Image 1 (tube, helix red, strand yellow):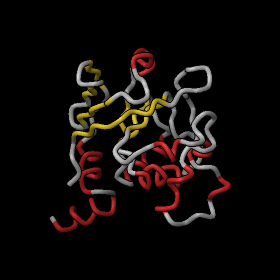
Image 2 (spheres, one colour):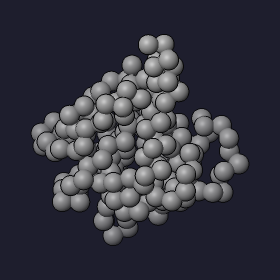
Image 3 (cartoon, one colour):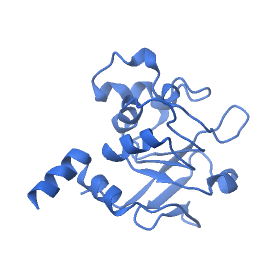
Image 4 (tube, one colour):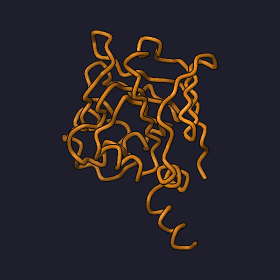
Length: 178
């Protein structure tokens, strides 16, 4: 089972003006020019390369790192590759003020930790690239650099069960065996 506490180096998606990126759509996350790639292991190298200022993200991110963005992350199409590219890189969690509904459902079903932090915009200036963010998925507690604490939405019971099982299919197998 996956751990309910995650800690990793933070990547805060900011635009060229220093503002937290809002409305990052699935085409910015994984551009349609790469849709011919069908191996999820290959998808990571193209993550965010269509997002201005983040074209080299895939070369810099490390397994276990955490990505933070503003409102409506993953808006747009139901492009599964926009989730799979982060899984391929081993990203530990995505934290955003809100997520596109289809994107959030795809991420949950794939076992990617997506954490909704509704008050993020009020605190955005305190988060920096390279900070260490610790997340308690059960309580929603976020701890920045071991000092400051914030409150995000805790995982629902079902979201936690799917996440800990690994993905929706593994969760379904567990339920069927029970």
